[in-house]
Length: 159
Image (cartoon, rainbow, N blue to C red; front, top):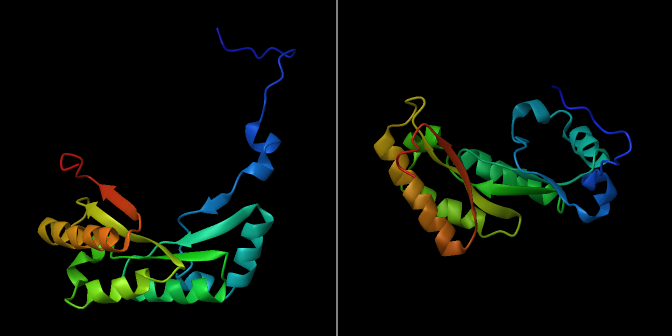
């Protein structure tokens, strides 16, 4: 027998009833993608019109970490950045990256380390390199006391 709603029971919609109590944050907007460069202002306005109050721009490389910080400074209070190296990009890690990511992450506009983690779905970076770069980013997050934006795929036995 299928569920039959009782028309005499009022179903509450807690989001609508308490909308003023919610802070809507988009935690995964790839605003550093070139597709957004032409109409970033209108994208941000549509997000605001939809009730999104803050947007976190996750980063996957040193370059995107720098670009996201730049955007967060242009749109203070609306955009926030992260600083990190995605597991697919782990092979690009160079000795100076730790210090450069630290310099980015110390800024108040940068709210997390990442996207970092492990991804064994594709062999863009070897598992050994991914683990080493992930460990370095965990150390950085601990050092500067910021959360981690974690990415994980096909390595659940490790966690």
